[in-house]
Length: 311
Image 1: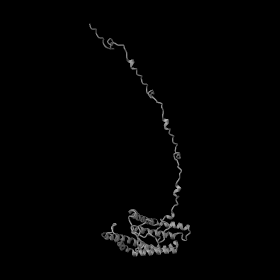
Image 2: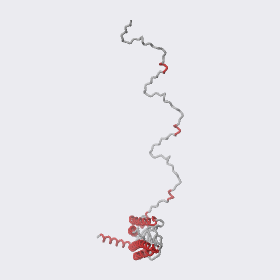
Image 3: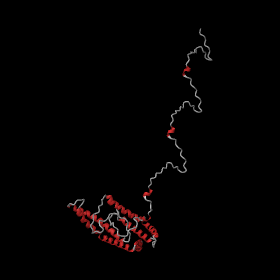
Image 4: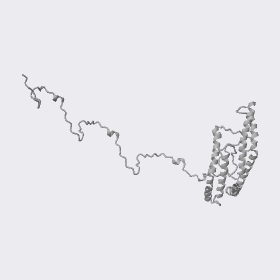
């Protein structure tokens, strides 16, 4: 039941797109682009396997690791077989997608997005793609990442095309209000994005022969017109030091450092502590001195019995 529903939905979508796309793009232009895409896809699908023997012959002539000696012929042939298999898979998969998705719009912008096949068709001559030119990161990793990233953006944001194209169609007074173009772009981005994510490791033709999207990204038609960079520039400098925050108490002005300086010296020795009893003034040392001598022998102790006078 699930497979029947999916097949029915795909058939209905194809019928809608078949009738809607010519209205959006112009019948003759759309038909011509669709035929070119279908024919190229069929050719690459049928001839993709030929990359293996062609690259094996080229590898035997190039040698291996820069060496063209007879001993490098077999290693070069094996390296060519591996390269041919990689190119054959990419050419065959891209050909199948061009045939099945000949109705779909193509991405806009192809610079450094995915690694290319060496020639548009397998029987043409071309120069081999260098994975390490100028570096391995720029020649291999970046194209793979950009292709996967663009595919993910199209799958995730493809639904944005429906309201955006309808808004644009209403402004342009289109007959269907831009709905058919929105559906065409939406399904094109979903199918094309899924293909790019799945085939990001393999090469594909970089020249698009189908109809292209109006914008590079799904949300491109709703871009906000930000002012130019120069509009934000100004030579005026604002000093916020003198501005007082609303509702804040005025800050007390600190006296300058020079006001705290003084040449006067205070002595606290003459001040009396509040509430303390006055300290008794000690007599000077000279007052205790006396020249008189007192004889205590003749003084009688109080209460003591008088001693008898010795005879």
